[in-house]
Image 1 (cartoon, one colour):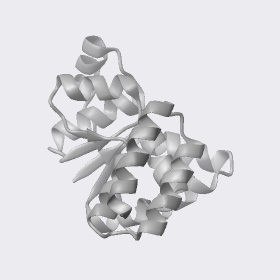
Image 2 (cartoon, rainbow, N blue to C red; image 1 turned 90 degrees about the horizontal axis):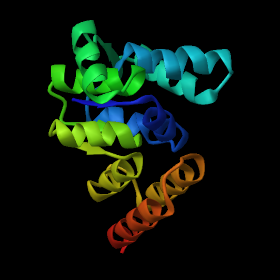
Image 3 (cartoon, rainbow, N blue to C red; image 1 turned 30 degrees about the vertical axis):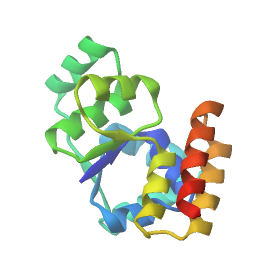
Image 4 (cartoon, helix red, strand yellow; image 1 turned 90 degrees about the vertical axis):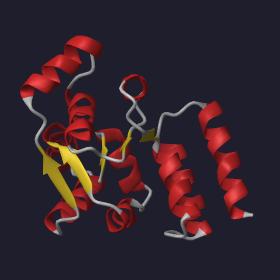
Length: 168
């Protein structure tokens, strides 16, 4: 089982690989992530929200509980709130294999708590390495995430080099 925060879920939906991820592994999100991606997205007529909602209807994405006491501890200890907070709580509670996040604060918390994590670009590379998506689809997904995301040039360049190695 894996979990993801809102920004990563949206990026992976935009990149047309979210369904593949849910075919490979169970995906659980928090109520806050659901509200940020589906409820608020639908209010703004954002297509990604419909993709995520369809995967939920198809029982490929589940919504999990993040107990208030655990959320409070995390907020007091690390200052992360809502989506990232609940995502980390769910990762711990459900013993997720890893968290998908592009949020720097969330990554720091995951490191401090020894929770494995990947950024959206790493997920695309992993899907390609494991032959779950074609090289062409990986390149397309990578470019979509690069263009829609807010990752630094250094991170993008390092992941691009990794993807090129895989595609060779």
